[in-house]
Image 1: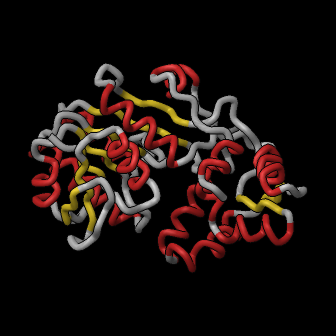
Image 2: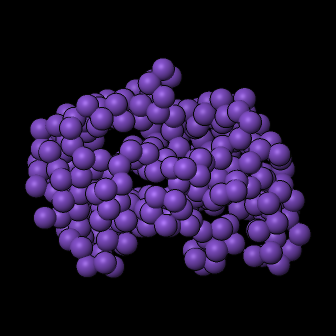
Length: 280
């Protein structure tokens, strides 16, 4: 049996493929292009829009790793329903779903909430990875170029807003562990604990680059304008909306009782360790 990985050539899926392949496990990479070559994996063309293609890819799988792409919320909700239908039909041995930091509260709705609710009702064994914010967001040109050119780290959070940051490498570590640890179910929170603030991030970047770096809060609208040329106007507006909603919260810290540290004995990378690991 194989492990089926959504977004296998993307920022979140590729490290999962690499982690499983390094462990000697058979991997099937789901991509939109059947001619794509993925090291350590066989390739199957299956898009989120086809329940039939997804069910065929999931059938007989030992594990399926799912996360939703950054696109319009309407498409994300449609994809979530298709994935749930495919899981119910094919019944893989286990599903691991990364929320990618999206809200899962059924009262607020949204694609991640639809997917989580559907998995819970499917009867298929599953676990949910719940990160807060990704360190890879800090590699966007509007952040990294500003760090390098001006010694300023801009981001749309308050300076005193603690966040349990995680990296895609941490998600891969936790996913690989959850495929082996069927006794761990429900939500596994992934991120640094205690949570850190924007100035803490800036200090880590400064130490890595050997220069003074200061943190600069920006507005969600400033972020939208900066990322729209990279990810598109619709997705950028959706991301800005999430940060606007986040601005009303006291923090984005994980709860230690359901953390990867406690449930899986996996400690996510510090910002400094992550910067070293990605060879920036």
